[in-house]
Length: 636
Ligand code: PLP
Image (spheres, protein in one colour):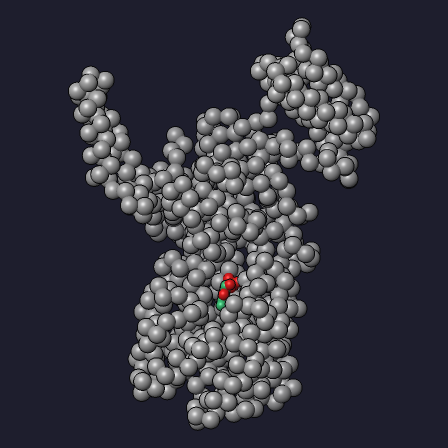
């Protein structure tokens, strides 16, 4: 657990059991531990191809409960009487089962839901469970969407369009008047406050969304003039996901609370103060409170920040306390799913055995590198080891130049490369054995440079988009065999034909590391499956996925705790990944046409005697068999 920093990022949901397997503890209030490796073995034996996302559905419920409990506690401590509603923004993970689970867990707390696009709206409106369930519609909306929202309002549902730009306000008034119903909406306000973090642009006066204070004042005056002050129901801001500093959130809540108080004094009656999403998830190995890089506040501190800041302003301004709303998505969904991928084999740096003897007549440059092996072995101190590394770098460059100009043949160039890496390995072993607190960066970097490369059966672009796009680190570790110490370090590469399809940033207390501790693996397919889990992928990753190289959606398994089961869990549902046929249809290739073309080719070749007709039939059958397969490789 410590090696992979689980206590820092796992929020208590993950650990390692006595068998050396990763296990999930979805519910701290219950005993159950679910063995992740056993789940994967079971679903694979049942025919589910990897890669797969394993969803621990109970974690979703646990997160919804934790969030609501934190706000309840904060309200009690602060004596805040306005109430609180958690709203789930479906864009973070729209999968129906995920939304169902969150809605169900939120039912006792009166939680709501948020959507932000046409398709999300169409999926969400029928999902409302009662007239009391709050539904917020963010994002840009066309007239048809606004009309549908108004229709659901007329049916009695509590659906509020959130005005993102001033012109939408006019449209809502007009469409409501046309429909003969009283307008009801919220407004997203552009605040001055910004929060540091990767999504800082979502806040501040330059943000893409929201109305400015002058626009808001004009809008408020208009509502007062027209005698419909109750139309403005909600004030909203969103500072951006993964807020890095809780102080920024307090500033923003104070600012919106002042706006609220100003509007109340003008005669408006907003019911809700919606502080958006942004509750951060600690993807890093930095423990709580460690400062920059990780998220250094707890859910409780987040809730306290919102509640106390709102309370402070309402007290000072003498206005009624509004119902507080948050739209937390990442913090609710991130922990519940783990991506499990098969390792297909390892590539190692070339090397020579320690007892290697240089062949007679070897090129002098190989002799230089060979001699450096001995120098490395006898070097005294880090300074001398650094000097050996510099000499080896120089000899390697010389070998490259000699090869380019034809003075070194292919075998000699290959030998020079092996000797170079052997020198590096020896230096690294000496540095590791000395275990200094500080080593020159060039020596420090050797561990990463010497790392193996593990070929993993997945696509970074499909499954870990934020790693590629934003350099976001995700916790990664083997899901089994953790009773044996991992002895090697590796970078991970995916199976796309794109050199960006790699993972070379891993969580570490000192920030990113460029290699991961793994077990010793053969260069070909491992005898036993070797599987890595990528954790905290439940937020955004599923839906951001991109079909680069036509790698499609991965398989899924939905797992629940069951204390009455000997295994402690049951798999409610499995979903196979996207098939080759489905991916091809997205780019307008269809099986009938493709198979007819192969058939024509085979007929021609059979006629020409290149293949026998029976063989041609078998080839066609082989080709056809690809269409229902998933798009990833078969590690067996
Ligand atoms: N609300 C709005 C308006 C958003 O744009 C977002 C996403 O950035 C969220 C809520 C969800 O934020 P998070 O996933 O950080 O909780």
